[in-house]
Length: 450
Image (cartoon, rainbow, N blue to C red; front, side, top):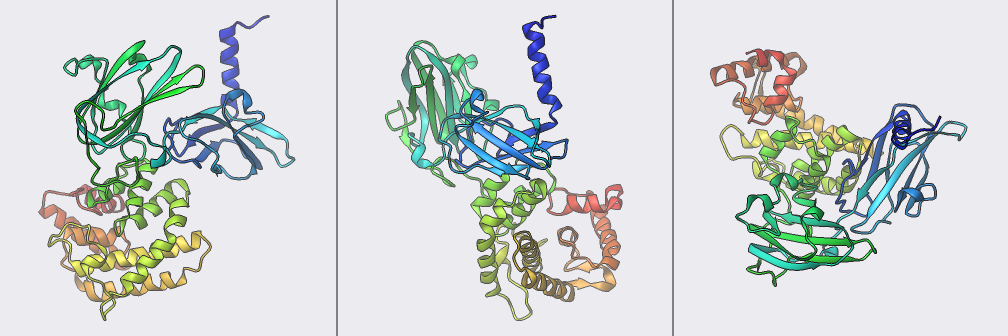
């Protein structure tokens, strides 16, 4: 009996499902189209135990048996980082093979893929511009694909081959899916015509764009934003973490999103941490590690964290506490956040995390652990009223922060929770716009019931 082509294709695709290897991601994304580093992380999961695995990366599917790009060799991990072997604006294919204790191949994963974008500012040919800008360009024969790369402080309005008043010609905002801040790639092949075309970009904020025209013969044309575009003028972004991507500065609101689990994009968490604004990188590095097991951010920032805590120690008061501006200048300036209490709490928490990071990296973190213990005692001595189960002024912000960081003594935690519940009852109920409230609700059901 002969298989029909469709049935054969289905049968072959089912074999990959039986492998039990899945959730294959590059930089924690499923088949991303604009990886911006030459050494991305590849991660996967397996339903079956194995002794070792081998990761192959190639420039085409047929070359995976003898990969022309990269071969991990045998590893016992479920994550690898490539050596710096990739180049910008290319598509790559990869797969995972697993082996048993005898070295016999047991499973082969489906083939996954990813594409690279810009690695650095030197790879970009465009300039940051603003205004109502336009550019005409020609498309030669044999166009295979057209990709529009865009980075902007705000989502711009983009039209291709249409008057801006015609809604059908506009690229919808949903197409601008951020990868590491506002860096997007959009397939616009179907929007282009043979020969003469026109692109219009409107943005009040700085925007940089490159349209890559990929041809079947392997050649490429690039149409980039620059000062020669109609109506364009040069304008630099206010905050740029790289020559291509605009950045986001950490804030209390961002920490709230993280606490509530609303920010699940690991790469965006990394991007925010890399802006480095006092406290958030400690917390973000810990969150990324807990979610993914990835220690990259911890390794990268460990010397910075160490030096930061040494610097803060220079500003300690005689009683061991620290002032507000020393460590939590990013928090809103309001009465609910008593400066000495809040700053010292975060100083304690940072030392606690550094002890954890030291253990993860195989370093001696005993000094950080001792410092955290000493700071906790000082916070309790100076700011906790045992008879009233109250921290500092007893406000909701103060109590949620203590519960979030685990500062409340074990035999007084229920009392602190009760006080917080009374505080929230007198108000309008739990206010999840306040840092720590969400965590307190999860740990303390009675607050939720109240």
